[in-house]
Image (cartoon, rainbow, N blue to C red; front, side, top):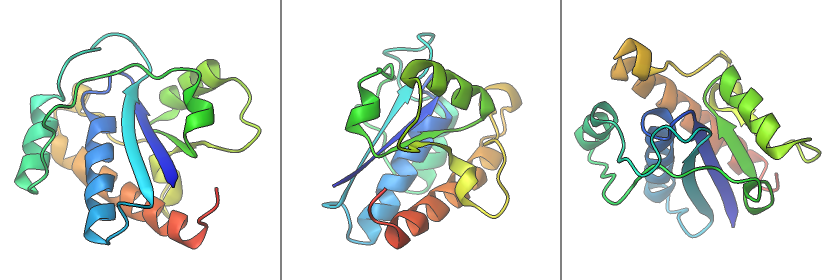
Length: 154
């Protein structure tokens, strides 16, 4: 079982979008029994809140439900539990390094690092542009899944 944890600042916009998009991609390829996905916050701001309305709407438009999802806080123990620790931007990467410490197994990545155009995932909290985030997340999740299938042992 390959385990992936998507993380962003509050776990209400980008990381839950990535969690559910990736889970849907895995399901459509018949790989659900091989991969586990989750998402978490790197800060406490929105713990217990459901995904942002804009995230829910983008996912619902693709037939993907976020029912039952609430923001949870990433924990230091997640380093051992997950094979891939995926942040959305450089601030997330810095927060992940503070939380997890050294990364001797190379688990810490940014989602768009797996694409041919590495960059931060657009943050709709500030831009209100959930379409740009949707495009980034889909490109990143597709590239991450391609990477995992080509390199099944992280």
